[in-house]
Length: 322
Image (tube, rainbow, N blue to C red; front, side):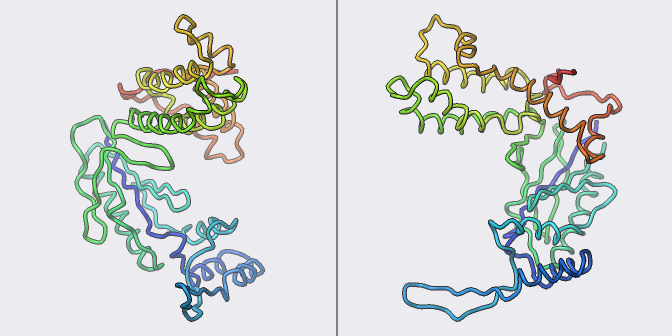
């Protein structure tokens, strides 16, 4: 059985550290001259001042950073980081400034060595392009069912903290990929949000049943449906945690007495059960990627050599073929 060693890097002030001279060099090298001149005028002659009460600093030129909150900000950062080094033995996954490096091998020592080699290349790249990694906020994790873990990975001669779970793009990944940590985190968020909305959803609320249902769909449901295409494969004992919350909330919204079944409250409010929601999103997701214009994404739908599934995940597919 292979182990998957992974490091999730925290790039310190990623958007603020984009070096203008280096960015313009890459733009001029890769894009037409007209676009280079346009983006150069966009970045050049930007300045700032610091004011504390009545004291004002002198005007200083901004030599790094892309305007945050702008449409071009993420695009410019992608251009700047497009030449991040890669290796044959690892996978580099990036989404804006969220960066993950993964590698799989039967031998944990080999997996760790492959990962360390890639980290060393990235370390040189960050130094060259005037960016830095916060190793204290970066995380090393080993995805495996074994009790063993991969040897320590370092950045700048400092150990990367190890953890049994990591948050990446809003999803909580545990070592065995059971999704229980993610579901528990979402359950906590739902509880806090529901308490804030209790005066609107409770029996003393003056809102109509239709408006209460609308509040649930708009403010509570999106919390747990995020990433459902991935965590939907979790065991029923884990997804039941969210189903219990939904059932209790719908009973609170309707004020249903004890003898009214959960199926009745769900049907009356036209809200599907968790398993039905998983099936709907899984089918829609497969349809979307099957017809995608990117051939690499379409490749994900093709069958792969059979692999033994982890016992910690529910061995069932929710995709409904049409």
